[in-house]
Length: 503
Ligand code: ADP
Ligand code: MG
Image 1: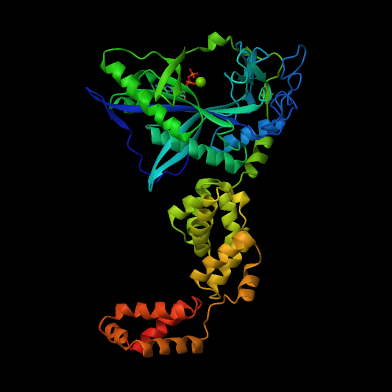
Image 2: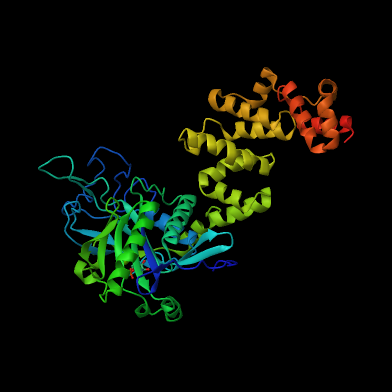
């Protein structure tokens, strides 16, 4: 169990025409395993390949072909389980889930209904400073993805692309512990963050590498607490499942719309039909897709082509020993090691690549200053050009160089911004640029003193004012900075102006 020094957030309450209602949400997240080969074949999983070019005979459902389990996918599923503090099942098994669909040539999907590889785990979802929801994970199972039917390429025909067929997915199923739209989105964000840290799924929702089925029900205040005490689902309302959501915004909208639909029905004396629905973002409504199917509808049975999957404790232990530092731990370490705020630590650890970049910048430099420059200057600049951290024209070494020059007093903060822009657009070694372009901060007190003396002599009226109101000394500092082209050391200027004005 995680150490919980958090308050739990309040559930989302929606006021109907008659009563208040609370939301109850459980998510089934499909995460594509970050494997180069499919779950039961050696075909490539590369995104964007020529249609039907990544298809082995077994993926195409050719008669007599046998699936062979990909050990790499098993290892990544175990790693994911360990990253979610979950129980790893040394024995699991694959089942056939039978259904007909043109993009499913086998006529069944191989999945793990009865004996999943990963059991109970948990995800801590922070909703604000000191406020977090602990969402229980029920299970993670490995399964095959289906192919893709394409209906919009020809007016008379549909096409099928089997490149995705047989790609390994992890279905990560939460308990109904999520209590509002924002929490649901935050849960997916946190899950994606952890998977990206682990390197078990790239979390790319645009490419469909991560998508969620969202289960929503509503209940009256007090009912959820009764469910918590007894774990008896009878205290909860009937749920509907909204399929295949692939954006945080749509997840939130769909939950809100669906909850309101259910409330209206219930307050009207009706009852909720358990079914699978689709969210239509254009119309802002959910529509019925099919009534809820049961396990027997799919005629699940153990896949006769595959032996039960047995893994050894040593296999699990090796993976456990290789787990990277995870987001919560990294965030806490950034706060203590670099003395940065919780907020800055959250920003820097939100993405594993950002965190790694920052740590390289901070190597041998002031961590707080480095954090400041990464967050305010670099992230801002990259965002303007719509670049990812991996595409940054400024390397961590270069940014570290700039931070080092500021810390040593070689350049002022203002000049550093100019320097950053030069490095960003034209590259080069920051120290060399400063040297060549004469950007060094003037700490030579003689030169600064001359400027201070001159400006004081030229502005007797300002001197009088400043003596009455010492705050006005800032004007002199500004003038000296201007006179020295922004290169004077502000601390030295400040000190000297105060001394000369006898403030
Ligand atoms: P099924 O096998 O029919 O899909 P599961 O037990 O696997 O049913 O549940 C699927 C998802 O629905 C899980 O994420 C679970 O947390 C969620 N869920 C179950 N009951 C409710 C409920 N009353 N309200 C909201 N979500 C629920
Ligand atoms: Mg399910």
